[in-house]
Image 1: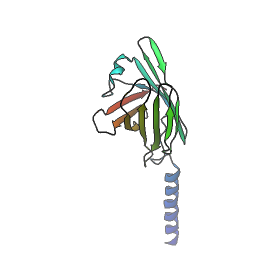
Image 2: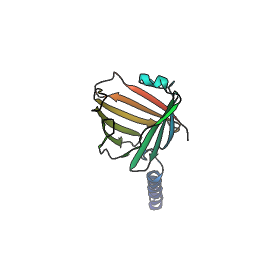
Image 3: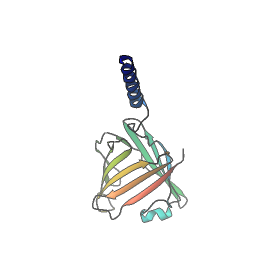
Image 4: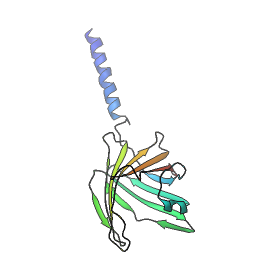
Length: 170
């Protein structure tokens, strides 16, 4: 009887250790890769996207940091946005560009490590005066990792909510 309990205890401990060290749901997802926007699968995109032939989101990520930049193609030109880099601990980073746009952004995982939560404030103080933007984003990968969905919700409410669906290029 004692031997059976010992064996059972060893099996239980072994299973717990195997579960704890496996790539389980506790691991944080990586969003690294080049992602191409699917305008057909996306909803409520800004009107400027009508002129965009291809929109790429290029992401590089480590366990503690993420960097990304955008690349637009349309009307015979390619526009590459500046690379943005953030820690994944929720620390807010503030930047100001030459056009007078002040951007405050923070990024962190949700408790499950399966979604990336992004808070963004944009203030336009340059020549072009636009209303201040204050958005929450949720980044989610599909189960097979082939698509990335970014849901952008204005903090002022559901009106203007965008869903951007990307497919992985590499």
